[in-house]
Length: 504
Image (cartoon, rainbow, N blue to C red):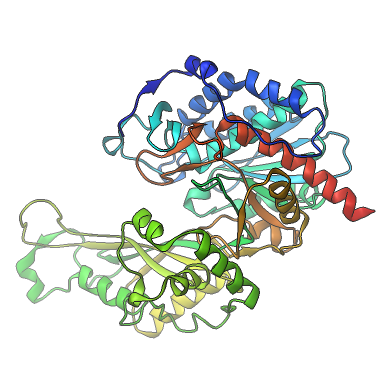
């Protein structure tokens, strides 16, 4: 990525966009002064956090990442923060008692996806500041937008409120996990801890800080997210004596089965001949169709997000079956999927090697929609393969959870609408996010709480090289770090006001 590199100290000389005021945030100008005063510290803190990646799949920086997250919470003013052990990577639980009538739950993830440094324009753990054409000054680094940038902006918001001597308008309960990027393998164990469960039960809902502002300055509200299950299928000498224990000469395929072909045959049963419609037995049994209101929301999304821009962003020229744009969007938000993430077998280097592989592996994922569950999806997969005689295909589930959804009239969502209307920000409402986060842990039993995403920041490249988070916007309509921080300040006050209104 070409761009002029800037140091942190240069930020203080930049003119930031005007931050629109929310009507009822007390002492807002003082809070803004505090936000601006701590800007360099916040940027450096984000860089330092990016420099310590927790990667559950690689067992990297565990439990160091959890201890770092715990200290971040304490530094932000949480009175207590402790590590919660699980059968995998530990989580963090923290509380901030402001003496308020309203309590809000906050979900963080402190882990990030893997990365290959050679694919990046700058070191992925450096947090380098560069000019990004058409956007402004951005920070490049793994975890910059997913989710450390938005989360750091939230921590900066509560620091700024306290810095002027005010108490927060709401109490906070924070839960932060280190396994979101492996489908939250053990997060249910965290919320099952009585102390954590009881603290969350006092809240009016839980939200995850996110970067939900579009390039034109508009905002996105999501009423839920698809569920996700990650798993792998393996065929080879470790699963049956029909296959060799290691790669052998390919001439033996005349008398020995090839595990790669066997895996391909198994995979082919999971989707229809069209290559994309799930064909697992009973797959659509509990899939809830879109409501008329959800279809209306999707139609509004189509108007706000032109089709040609969407295709350019994704690098494609057509949708499945050459369907119309609106049909593709309805599919995007309502279709459960069976996706192959990767296939590995035998030799893949230059030229040939005349081998019969001893092992073949596929990494897959399900995306689930209401009213499916993760356990249901896994059970149906196992039954489907067993019915077809694939007893030599090993299934290993690495993590997963069901979909989540929150009513449009919940306080978390109503507060977002109120904030956007107060500040004149155009917004669209998505029936659900086609991506996933474990909100079902909160709005499923036993808590049954609203769970939402919120954040007026911007970034891109999640899970990809050159992931970035916007620090200083070149467009006054789009939020940089200071504006995103103030949006969290305003949101907490609007939540408090909407809760008070509802109790009158």
